[in-house]
Image 1 (cartoon, rainbow, N blue to C red):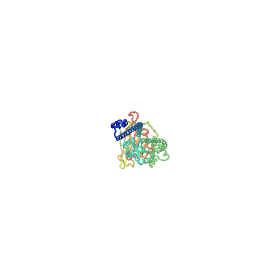
Image 2 (cartoon, rainbow, N blue to C red; image 1 turned 90 degrees about the vertical axis):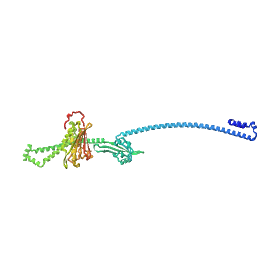
Image 3 (cartoon, helix red, strand yellow; image 1 turned 30 degrees about the horizontal axis):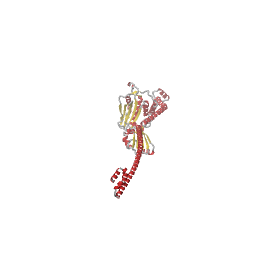
Image 4 (cartoon, rainbow, N blue to C red; image 1 turned 180 degrees about the vertical axis):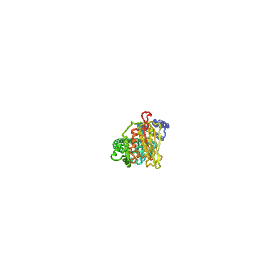
Length: 503
């Protein structure tokens, strides 16, 4: 029975205490026959009571910890919610910053593309280099000048991709070290009228990350040509004013000299009766006086004086041409006929004297057929052609040139847009650049004193440019001959070809 009571007490914890006390009842005690059993019962009751107390304390402790755990869980959930909200705000801010950076990056990309477009649209060659000469930037103008794309040029040495650039390593280093740009103006490339001119500037590029330089190359060929034309026109205008003043000052004594020579011939002529009357009054004969003058070569001296006077008169006439601009005699003219007539007039100049005897100069005609007429002064243009032919013949007689080998002069005509192009080319000794640059200047000549006035090509230039609104250029290299190029505008009004006069 005792075992049953204890078993029932284990089944229901709340009744364990009552079940244990029931063991002390008289009925239970009556059943216990020995003291040993009594002690055992009391021990069991005590253990059961202790177990019950421990269980109750554990349950209270468990409830307390469970409540603490719930509070901690709630606190943790609140913290997680706050942290999540904070992270969400930070994430939103991060998205905003990323969006701003993307906008800034896009603006920077657009700005970079815009700056590259500006740089590539510039006609100047722009090349960025490091101190060692490695290319860091290469614009479109540099690609056009070298036929090398920027993708191929970047990272390579400057002299490998642009060997013709007039830049040295020393110039680059000095520019970077001094921090001062270096400028070189009017650098010439090539020879003759095909030569090009450029301005070179090296800018220092200094920053905390990059040390280098920027090379800028500008094509100033047209500017140089315009400056030369303006200088030439100024010289022509100055010469025109000078010629007008000098002509009046020279003509008076020159006229007196020529008139005096003419009177000397008249006063010593045997055909004039007044000369015989005066001679008879003085007891002499005109024939004997004339014989004496001829014997003493007086008439040769007079011929020399008259020839010099006539030559001076022609010089004055040429000078006066600079101060006159007369187009009243301009008519439609066939250039081919004009050139042929000019060749006929200059035929006596085409015989050259060589150590082996005389050699005839070869004339080559390359005339384009069907060229329209040109409105010009045939007389003035004939003077121009004769001057050029005369200069070519004189060039073949240059002592430095030596005995001519197959000397020839080539005349070419062809249409060039709305102009007629005339070329007079020779295979003579040519000219150095220092001579070619001044060839059209007044009084400039390479001939000895007394053999030339230096006005022939100046008059030619003035006639072509001022009287005919054309252009004249010269191409020449030492040892490779010379070619003069004349362009004359075509007539801008319709006229019958039947009115074209012969030169």
